[in-house]
Amino acid sequence: MTLLIGLLVAAAVVLGVLAAQSLVKQYRERFTQASQVSMREMFFFIDPRKLFLANAVALVLVPGLVWLVTGHLLMVALAAIGVAVFPRVAYAWLRRKRQARFAAQLPDALTMIANGLRAGLSLQMALDAVVRESAPPLGQELGLVIREQRLGVALEDAMEGMAGRLGSQDFDLVVCAVAIAREVGGNLSEALERLAATLRAKAIMEGKIDALTSQGKLQGVVVGLLPVFLAGVLTFMDPEAMAPLYNTYWGWAVIATVAVMELVGALFIRKIVSIDV
Image (tube, rainbow, N blue to C red):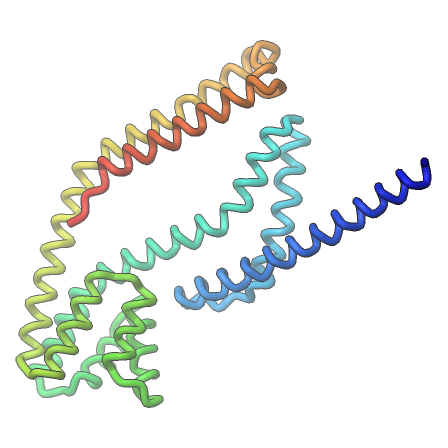
C-alpha cells in the first residue's frame, strides 16, 4: 500500500512538472511573440527573449523580496500579479506616448507637405523632405513608408499599413485625402492644409478638455489611493489589530471586495472624465 501511494505521488509530481513546463513554454511563446510585435511597431529592436528572461527573473525575485519584507502570502500574490501584468501596461503606456507625439507632429508635417506640393515637388519628394526634417516617431514611420514604396509597394498600401500600426484616427483622414486626390484628382495641397488646420484646432480643444478634467482625474487618484494609504498607516501603527486583515480568509475577502470596488470606481471616473473630440 505504501509503495502504491508513493508511486501515485511520484506520478502526480511528474505530471505536475510536465504541466508546468508546458505552461511555461506556452507563456514564453506568447510573451515573446507579443513583445516582438509591440517593440517592432514602436521601432524598439530588442531581443524578446531577453525581455522574457528579465520578466522571469523579476517574477521570482520581486515576490521573494516581498515575502522577506512582509511575510504575507497575499502581498506575495499581488506582487507576482503586478510583475506579470507590468510588461503589458508598459507597452500600452509607451504606445500612448508615441501616439501623442505623432499627433503633435502631424499638423506641421502636413503643412510641410502642402508647401512642398505648391513649390512643384511630387508627393514622394515632399515626403522625403518631411522625413529628413522630422523627429521620431513621424520621421520613422514616414521613412518606412518611403522604403516600402521603393520596394514596389503602392503608396496608398504603405500609408494604410502605417495607419494600422499607429491606430491614429487623424492619420486615417490623411490616408483618405491622399487616396481620393490620387483617384479622382483635386488640389491635394489645399486639402492637406485644411486638414492640418482642423487637427490643430482639435489639439487645442483636447488641451482645454484635459485642463478642465485634470482636477477630476487627480481627485480619482487621491480617493483611490486613500484606502491603501490608510491601511499602510494603520498597519504600521498597530500591526496586531490589522493582522486579521492579512492572515484570515475574512480579511482576504474584505481586501478582494475593496479591490473590486476600487476598480469599479476607477472605471466610472475614467468614463466620466474621458471626453472624445
